[in-house]
Amino acid sequence: MENLITLVNNIQRACTALGDHGEESALPTLWDSLPAIAVVGGQSSGKSSVLESVVGKDFLPRGAGIVTRRPLVLQLHRIDDGKEYAEFMHLPKKRFTDFAAVRQEISDETDRETGRSKQISSVPIHLSIFSPNVVNLTLIDLPGLTKVAIEGQSETIVQDIESMVRSFIEKPNCIILAISPANQDLATSDAIKIAREVDPKGDRTFGVLTKIDLMDKGTNAVDILEGKSYKLQFPWVGVVNRSQADINKSVDMIAARRREREYFQSSPEYSHLAHRMGSEHLGKMLSKHLETVIKSRIPGLQSLINKTIIELEGELTKLGKPIAADAGGKLYTTMEICRAFDQNFKEHLDGVRAGGEKIYGVFDNQLPAALKRLQFDKHLSIENVRKLITEADGYQPHLIAPEQGYRRLIESCLVTIRGPAEAAVDGVHAILKGIVQKAIAETTELKQYPTLRVEVGNAAFESLERMREESKRATLQLVDMECGYLTVEFFRKLPQDVEKGGNPTHSLFDRYNDSYLRRVGSTVLQYVNMTCASLRNSIPKSIVYCQVREAKRSLLDFFFTELGKKEVSIYHGPNRMAQLSPHCFKMQQYMKLYPIIVFANTIFAVETVE
Ligand SMILES: Nc1nc2c(ncn2[C@@H]2O[C@H](COP(=O)(O)OP(=O)(O)OP(=O)(O)O)[C@@H](O)[C@H]2O)c(=O)[nH]1
Image (cartoon, rainbow, N blue to C red; front, side, top):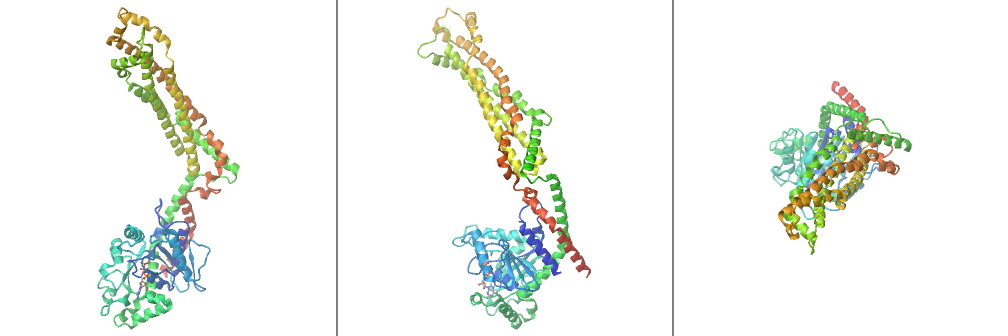
């Protein structure tokens, strides 16, 4: 049965090596499905001491105040013989045989993440201990729960620690080792409080009472240890760890364990409970419980792996065929993929796929509606006509016809067409961008290469932006041209009109009267409407010429010229595995773990039969 725990330990190691620490992910993580034991309790309640006693080694940083500032994932591996050693996940090639150096490395690695401050971090440190004297277990040491922030700590530290602890122990596969010091009232135990919140039935909570030797004279912990004060599903375990004085005197763990054993055996209050007290017993009990839990989890683990394998295989099928390793092959594939995208893009514009018709919508609805909203007639009110004509005359009133006034009035109307013209350019630009996005999503080949997809998208958007600028320049030029040179024929008719409608016998100054101004206004309106109708036709031509036709012709031209330089980064490295999303990459590795699980299941079947 020990094999099973070793297997689960190995799978956990593989998970962490592959970056699965049970964090948020699209698929369920394997780590979260594997059982582990988390040690929780108030600050200085004795969590690290319990861990050390279970391991039988002196290796954790000690001191006053907040010492454990990052979660420590501790995997114990029982080896048959040989010298015990430790390994950190972040130092894979280094074997530690000196456990004082392990303590120093935990402390240094904590500082590397949090600085030398009293801050905490939820990024775990992974440590494995290989020893003939340990039972196979995965234990997680967590920062101690606290009630107030001390000098140098952030105001949120109390809540931050609680959230971090909770994130570990609320997972249904987490076994909670709730540490409470015996020299404090159990009713105030932080460990029991939080454990009860996440595991109300107590199905996965183990109560550990530390500091029994420090209880006031005349009091004892018998009621708690017998489950009379606070009943848990599993029996309470009392421990006597090394005191600070023992640590300072470097009392070794073997001696400490012996002393602990003697303490329980020789105390009249506890001797009847001695067989189920102490850290040695705790270690064995946890290991046994872990075995039972793993047994019950194996079918679930298997189905999880089967499910993720099916999902992964589906994802791989979608990803398509692998890419050539040499530069020429890569370039060829890139060109092919880009061509496929370009083809999709064009099909939208040409009506094979939907989307291009929206451009006509801009010309047929948006532009005419915007032109209509300009309301030239309001702009040509008698007051405005009078104002502009008088201003244009200056100190010398016009003699025959208000030539300058006409020009100003016409120009002031036509210039407002720039707004709708610009809006039409922008409207078509937005539609083209939308079509690019659609075409990218529809190009299956691009799904395989996220970086290439981003690059192609960026290149297409940059081209569209350049085309928009050019289109704006050309389209506004059309409006400016109409302002810059008026159609002479239209005005040549004017004197006759004036003669017909006006009264030439009136004095010059009478010509500023309302009916004269109204006539001027209506002539201008006629001219402006004529020009506006012509622009309504020519603006779409300019936009199609500069943006739509150009996008069809040369959307990725610039990208192709730059491709030689970009080629390396687009692929994220030479092999296909690396092109997959990190998640997909991780799951592929899990597939390799599958035989281990099957093997574990075989052992499980054999054990059950036996
Ligand atoms: N006498 C005695 N002292 C103990 C016992 N358990 C822990 N201590 C002492 O209590 C102090 C705190 O113990 P730790 O194991 O560091 O407590 P912790 O909960 O890990 O502390 P933080 O990680 O800082 O939250 C140390 O000085 C230990 O020596 C015990 O059973 N008896």
